[in-house]
Image (cartoon, rainbow, N blue to C red; front, side, top):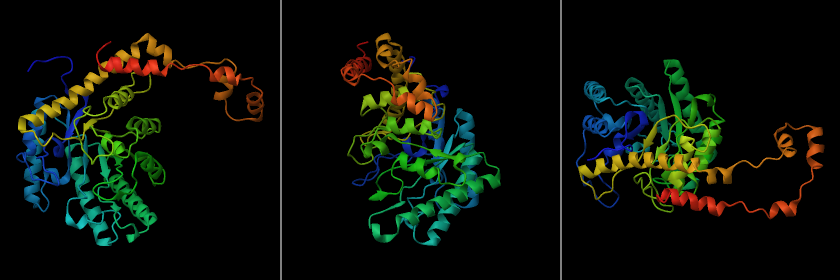
Length: 393
């Protein structure tokens, strides 16, 4: 295999979950088509293809119900694999959805025994993540939702979820863990409706927490696209709020189940716009955190195809970075998107409210008809973007 400028390196901050490249191809209509992979082998393979990090749920590494001795042996082997292959663990999370006890949710379940067990399991998993070096801890409420909506007041569910996050931030502070939480939204699946369904819901929820400074978001391309929303707009809102703590990159077609496809394999224009935003090629402050691919190979693939998939995610991101840099360096593009300036109105629009600015603003002369007739050249701008994406420029 030839090497070029788009091959990934650890400096690119790319990461995969054990559950992503380790996905055996199981789906609701058929069993596994690939062998289960040992976590240490996954780390080795990720190191070979230039990935920087590996992320995990607690059960991805330590099987549910393992003894203390088994746990220590598994963790010891995993740490050695990380060290031997130059791979780090930037993020960890807890599986609060697979075990039957979580069939009605975890932090929001009606049964207090379930809620207590969810906290027990998460505190143990947080300790594992910290031991492995994780700096971010993600919460995805996979079963935090309903099919029979009359089962609980959704206000009570929000209060229960808030209590859990507040409790766990206090736990981290008490233990001296320098760990940030990132909340991951999804509208549905595996529940009919999942609480806090979008990144916007999560940002509003964070403002109600006891320690909002420790909590941000982890938007996912597929989860926002399932609801027909713009991932780019939601990520921009999180970045503007200083709350983009982590991100999940993949591909998704609107209106489908959660596909978790190779990054950039669907809606290449939106993938381009997202990379452009994250990299700051248009002039905004870039995102400097982990770039995590929460995706998996097609069910058609064998083991070699899994690593083709992983390499493809990373190469596509780097290809889009190069395309975004070229697009935003184009003088015609810069001319179209340049800020419109007005020496009279600009100072008024940037000034704080006062009776004086109100009077000046209301007295400003604006030729409404003339302004409405100015073409903005957005057709040309979009065509330029398409031509850069297609390699015509």
